Amino acid sequence: MNWKEPMFSLLISHPIRTIAAALDVLGRHFYGLFAVVQEAHATAARFESLAQMSDNELARRGLKREGLAQAVFTVSAGT
Image (cartoon, rainbow, N blue to C red; front, side):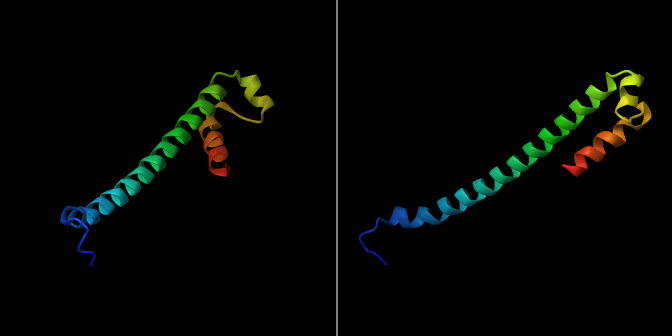
């Protein structure tokens, strides 16, 4: 033990490291949540884009209106 090190530093160093580690974990969870929300937004945008197309446009892409949700989620699962 370094007797010249102030007692306050010794008392506070462990809690600060613990708080920093907890904030790091929390940040990673928020980043993961943001990634999920971002993917959901992109999926919804793809669905809306397809939903705006006419039946003929969808048919040219090999899609039917009743299969749009499946098509969008199948593409999302593959990426």
